[in-house]
Image 1: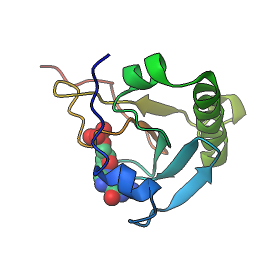
Image 2 (image 1 turned 30 degrees about the vertical axis):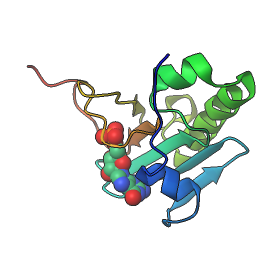
Image 3 (image 1 turned 180 degrees about the horizontal axis):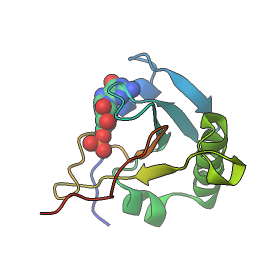
Length: 126
Ligand code: 5GP
């Protein structure tokens, strides 16, 4: 796998504490914080602390400990936001954009969690 990680991307700066963030939850390998331009009443980004560019990069190269920590933190964030249908929440959408066709703005893997309103269909035609 030939991903090159840009350590000057904005989420790397957040992880180094150079830029403030509105943290929802932090664990050993994972940080969850509110998106600066929320597109729904609840809009949280869950990111690994390690230098992974996309979800496939993370899935292929992260350690088991990082993957378990990320997945459990993601689950806990859904609980904290109250969006889980399993707990009577209204539901949510998870999105991980990758690369040019995925229109990824920040080249550090992040999972968007969006909820708090009906979100419409997943993709627009075209
Ligand atoms: P992407 O398009 O890469 O999937 O999404 C990047 C997301 O990062 C966007 O939703 C954007 O609003 C968010 N974002 C960009 N810069 C910052 C920042 O400095 N702080 C926070 N909290 N979110 C940011």
